[in-house]
Image (cartoon, rainbow, N blue to C red; front, side, top):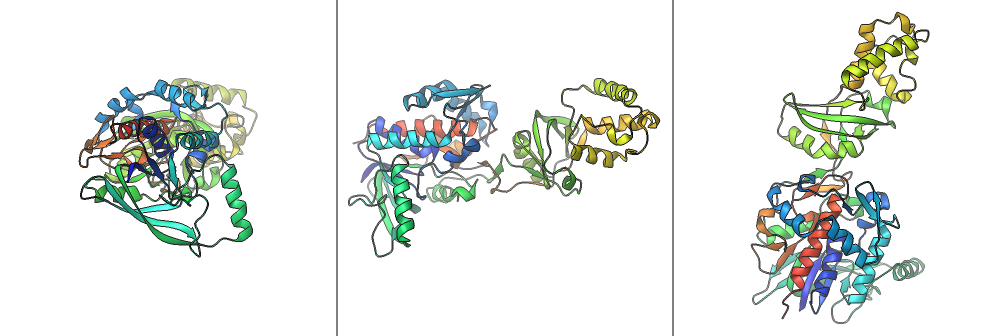
Length: 456
């Protein structure tokens, strides 16, 4: 019987295990289905881990119950995050409001967390997939699942432990030795059943985003089996697709834009940033920020439109004036040179084609009306979303375990004594900029501290 069992060895699970032990839990067991901890964390933010944001506010988060977010931020804001990670040896590097580890390496964060787990004596079960959880008759939880072992019954060095089928794993040396050994010996694996018991339980299994890194969403089914409700799940922070053929022409272009989302003619969302033009549609942070809203509008079959301005620093009157001046400046050139120096060639080609711009005609002979038509398209380029990307392309999951069933800031279940939730499995997702990692770490830290207290 363990004091605390944490299912999920990602960002939320690792800090929860650390804090549970620091708070006084005698025995803490961290269970992870992968062969290593923090697999998704080690690759987040292009491998740099944007772990918080100095501009931390509730408006950066989305949920079916957003009224609970301020309570979380009251107990764990960006200053709390900075202070916490400094205690682990992670010094911050600032890029505007975005905060990264000074090393600019997400893997170094994972290693610091692993070292803390080791130094505190947290037990770790790797390659243990939890399949079912139930409450015991007297107290706590009974956990069943499958673990990977070497054929013939010999367990891997990261699993071998007589008492709990667990072992300490930290840093990279142990992993490297294990990989080299397995490669030489061509180890074959098989699954065996395992069971565990714990007084307190935290579900930190993550969501459905990034399946290639092991996401499978089993935490949602576990939550349902323990009487919790789970809201509709869909990808968030994803590209947007369209069926229109012109996207084949602009694939590979990167350009600054102002993106506007209009619902029934009213501006619903607006942001500026770099747009990545793809052969299926559009991507980039400016697109990710609105993808969740686009999904909702498509699902609701609402009347909406999405516009891109390729001249984000121009007001409309200023842009029209400039285009007419540009006509005079380039009067001896042919039409195909009008956008030269303004946009990448592939994007210019799309703009020319959609306005039937006379490419071979001298610019001085092109009518002001045609010049202004091209200007209008540059300012209000209509993009017609067909759908958003799937979970393979998503950076996080929208939807999850209902926040109204959770006591915050402890992240304790209202339905089950001694049951906690943290991270992406909950119905909270943030915009780009470190908000999702901030929530994963913050909810894990607060839940871990609550779990570790008053253990008999």
